[in-house]
Image (cartoon, rainbow, N blue to C red; front, side, top):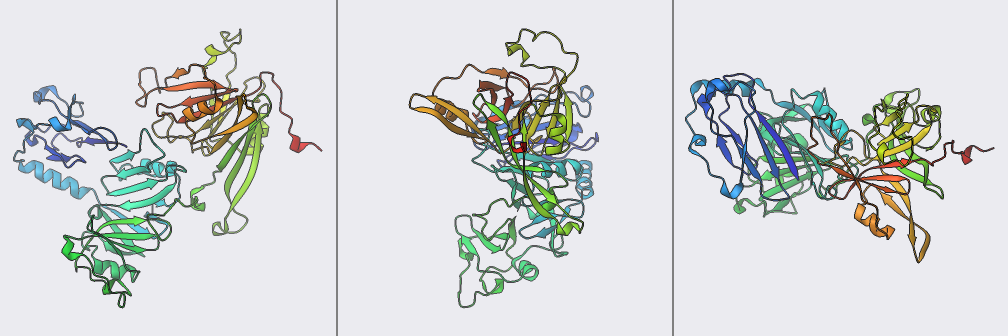
Length: 530
């Protein structure tokens, strides 16, 4: 699981915070009297090897540095970390202390409303359980001046074994997304000193109100007896869709349960003044058994999402797509009367642009191709002849599908299905496409047998099902411009049964490209025959 934090000093020349903290509880102090602006970056691995601490080099003369100038960083392994004398704690100057205090006061704390089993937010934005990852990221991008220092945490080698986490380090909030459907599953507030919280418009946590057991009792009322975890020394108090974890100082403060009097919080022998350490918002009665709920109607925002995508095939290969779509349909009444609509649509190779628009609606974006990097691998003798017209894509981001049209005939010639795995170059651009692809298996004792490839299949498993080696892959390098590098590395493209599987370095499938039959011509819709 990788986390990226960029610690950036204020743009003012005089501002120089006295220290910065690493997740491993290591602290280094800056030279307060230098009054120089530097950028420090920390890269931490929670699943792999020991974390690496990047420390700044020896200070250069003041006249050679300008505010915002990046400084080269030296990486030292954790066991060998030695603090040089220049990083030892120094007595900060009074001006630095005053400016740091004013800077902290100038940034107001988030004031958020807690809705159990539903959301956390305010009048401008709201994190709702079941909302897709892309919408949460869009909220963070829109309010980047208020919500700062966001980490994206995920497992690089096993992205399906751990939840995808957005960590709001400045505000002490974590958003946990389900690794499979990538919808918001749990909202965790792990540092209540960095945020104001209220319930039904009344604050139960702020700078003036401590979230004690008495305050929780007054704000939320009675509930079932809680559970004490002696290993963590935390007392978990559960409401429906809401849990509080209280910090206990020692085992002597472990609560004693009295079933005859356990009718509310006041009857539990919890130490007076015990404060909340963490708060969780989730769906259901149990935090351990919770799952990401379905997408709320308020999150559709006029878009259509794909619940599943089945690849249709004939004797030669794929012939089209059958999509099961979800939409928030509303009639002539109010928005509160909106209901979930489920319907199916099919799109085939050779369909015209008008056919696709009538089936799927307008795309989010139309992209005209300027070049075809895979054209050199085509057996066509005219592959080097430049085209006068450019093919164009219909990008359906909420469906996780791209459709390529021929520039001359304006008919479908290619489908691209995206899995939206973290660690890929196109991550968070598309909604995850839940596809199912039937593969023809050619074995001695399995004539005409088919196996299904899904969004969560690994390439090694597909090769085992095929029973024969696949040709060597084509290495694909993605970048936004020729001078930029892709931090996620290259991917590998394997050709199979008129399909190209783009495989990541962790063996997961990043995308699948479906090609039409060699001969042009529209596919006959059997459902439309009289």
